[in-house]
Image (cartoon, rainbow, N blue to C red; front, side):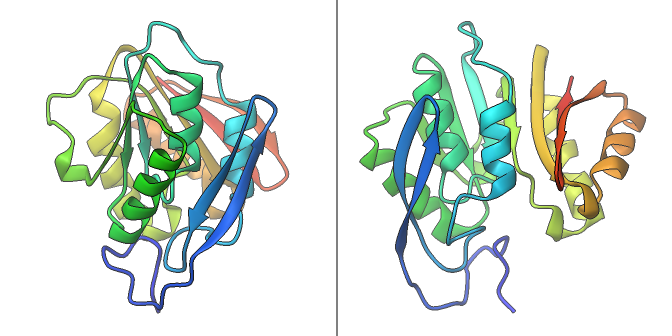
Amino acid sequence: MPQYFDTTPDVRSDEQIVPLQLPDLSAELLTDRGVFSSDHVDVGTKYLLLEGPPPVPTDRVLVDVGCGYGPIAVALAIRNPNAQIWAVDVNERARRLCQRNVEAAELANVTVATPDDVPADLTIDRIWSNPPIRIGKAALHELLNSWLPKLGPAGSAHLVVQKHLGADSLHRWMEQQGYAVSRRGSRKAFRLLDVT
């Protein structure tokens, strides 16, 4: 069965438009089958965008890990016009959609990329992510171990994770790796985690 974290989704295309409505911005986003939450902006993603930290004017590099069709990347780019946003995903269909959504919103500060396209020496101010929990615990740990060390000295990551998919165990694991983790919020099925 095709998964949204497959590199090349083997599922027929069926594009549609979904709205992203937040108090400070709105956008119409193109989605398709074979990407995460293709029929609506995921509840966890919207929670992160509503309750995550406000923009930091001095931030220069922000990364959306697992960008999908781009709701987080688009919101970050609008809110942080002076920062460079990296929208990263392994799914080529998701990247194409994200690029089209960035272009439709006329955002010049977003680079859509594969993980391998991101410079190895990039120092990141903030990571925002609804991480792909369903890739499995070992793969998720590997993914986070590849991104969290790129945070600068004052950098932080902001993650939304479903409780029943292991939010609390992920919280403990990141602490065991030496990161300071705090729970920014908890709503219904989701936890918001800040990692430094």
